[in-house]
Length: 173
Image 1 (cartoon, rainbow, N blue to C red):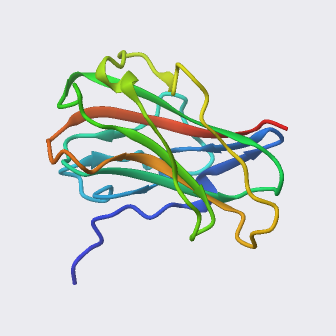
Image 2 (cartoon, rainbow, N blue to C red):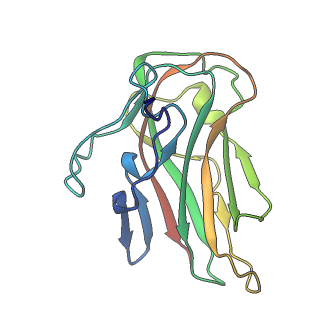
């Protein structure tokens, strides 16, 4: 029997706070995330996370790290990722990395290119750095689930050395 090559999100790895949600590495759906040739995923029991824990990309040509959570209607949310690079990272210069999000399965994606990944430091930083990325559920749609993620699926270039520490979905009002 073949094992699954993609990591499926563990909803218990989403930490609900009064101001929003924190997604730890196991809270993400990660394409190729269960294949140790491509990713190292922390296996710590939930919720005993070490602040330095991260999902570590070894190498892929298809980057897709996604999460989802149900939102409150008529409330704006800001989405950001805490990321860093290993010293031996490669393949990121000029790669079209996007933060994308939509509300509802049938929603329309909003997106932002993350140019920070051209020169991401070794110490973790929150991205996007230049401008916030916000989304708001529309009042009259029944599906208020937020779908968001980091994507680089267009270039076909191999890349590695990215560390995904967490994502934050913060309530703005």
